[in-house]
Structure formats: structure tokens, C-alpha cells
Image (tube, rainbow, N blue to C red):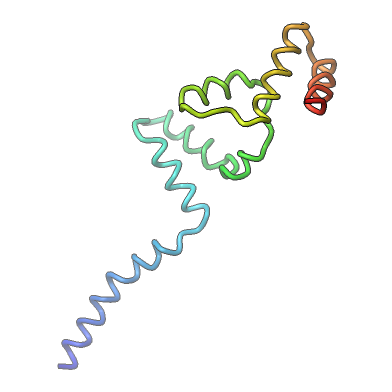
Length: 121
């Protein structure tokens, strides 16, 4: 009877340890799993470079609060492709960027214009 209980305990331990380890995934492990799902279909060097970039990027929560960078047109295309609406900040960035482009602004002049434009709206 003692042998049976010991064997049962060991068998339970063998199955319980991986389940506990999986339940206590770190944020990095969660990010790795998410990047791995997104990399489906990519192979070789393309997959390696995608995974490297994905894992090096900031978490999605930080990116959602980050203002858009230089090219709002990419965000517009991405949002349209995913069937999502742009955030108010993205809409402002898009409007100001198009206005600056129409005026032919570049460099420091564009940067200053964008800053002022985004404060006004």
C-alpha cells in the first residue's frame, strides 16, 4: 500500500510541476508566446529577425499610450486593414502631418510646426 501511494505521489508530481510552471509565466515568457504566434508562417532568417524585433519592442500597453511617430499614413493603412478606427491622437497626427507635407515643411521647421499643430487641436 505504501508503494502504491508513493508511486501515485510521484506520478502526480510529474504532471503537476509542468502545469504549475506554465501557470506562473513571466511577462517575458508571455511576450515570447505572443511573438511566436505572430511569427507563424515565417521561416529562417525572416522568422529570426521578426522574433528579435518583436521581443525587443516594448509591450503593447506602452505602445498604445505612445504618440505616433513620423508616418501616420502607415497607422491609417494598418487601422483600415484591421477594420479599426484611429484614436483621436492618431487623427490629429495624421491631419497635422498632411498639412505639413502640403506646405513642404522638412526638418526642424516641420518638427516645430507639428508640435504647435498638435497643441492647438
